[in-house]
Length: 310
Image (cartoon, rainbow, N blue to C red; front, side):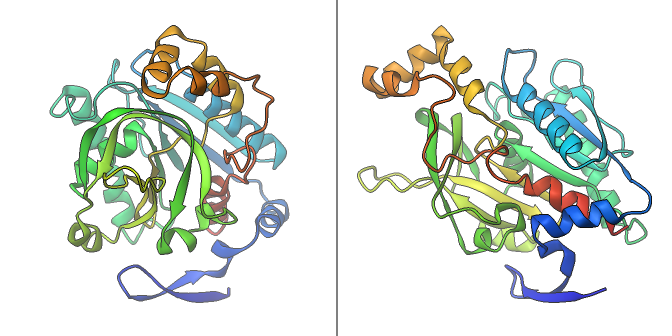
């Protein structure tokens, strides 16, 4: 097996499997050449608390399309975290913790959070055991990303002055440009941002201690004297999170904008002109808009390559 070396964010010369930087086609070939198709089990941790949303639909479609198009034996189960206090066991290969409504601060100490972070601690314990060759991969999205940042105390989570909603530019930092998950993205890249809270004032000492790195930050706004929020973090070799919604699609954005609450929010924060621009048919293309349908789903490719190596 071939290897390559890379200096990580802590300045340590680490050795990596060569297949982890292979192209999309090479990884697909790796799948096709497996003599025995490996079953991949995915757990979706539903953080929407029963609220109507487009995020779960998008995640289901992405998993279904990715499994079918790549001839994978891929299945998934869903767990309602906040209402039912459901969390998956350790029999899954990949865990996706979704976005969700409400404050990531007010839930601190709640019963469902205790259950959620107990699950996360079990995943970390599994991954820290050298005897477990096959590690558990975790992806945090938006609300889950904010919870993880608060849990690890690597930044301050605070309420924004106004709601962010739309397709905005994100800027890659040096670690982000070398991140497999973002392979092929331009700088800046564009994605869906929908939030009332933000992750700011990163604790760089804490980040270094836990081997984490900031991958992307908020769009540059020279006319606004506010710190740019953190938009993506790799927490460790097996856990990554984004503040933006990489699962979002044009249909979901259009449907979301048709709700009276979201229309009111956009008009109050951005004006009628912005509402008129955003309220377009879902097939209307957005320049450089990136979601997991227009860009290869690198997270799943990376996870699949790791599983195939086991």
